[in-house]
Length: 95
Image 1: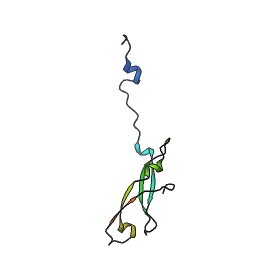
Image 2: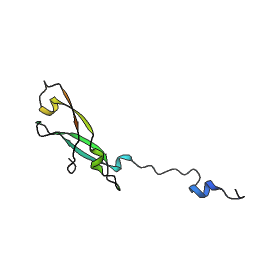
Image 3: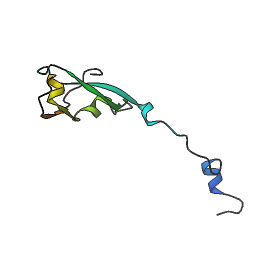
């Protein structure tokens, strides 16, 4: 290395400079999760998905997600005690 050249200062700018902190939730969108039509209550809840960026599409990131829901919540029946695992097959808009 030549005398008088400090690679650290020329490479990174200020010595000890910190990276800008980015909130991870600012890059995400809320999607509504709905159950199949056979159930009385269709709206299960909401989920977070990373926004579309470049070639990565948000709806593709949601496909295949598994949601575990109680039958009592789907049928509006307090006696029903089973749980279902619903897998996302297709995405229509933000539903």
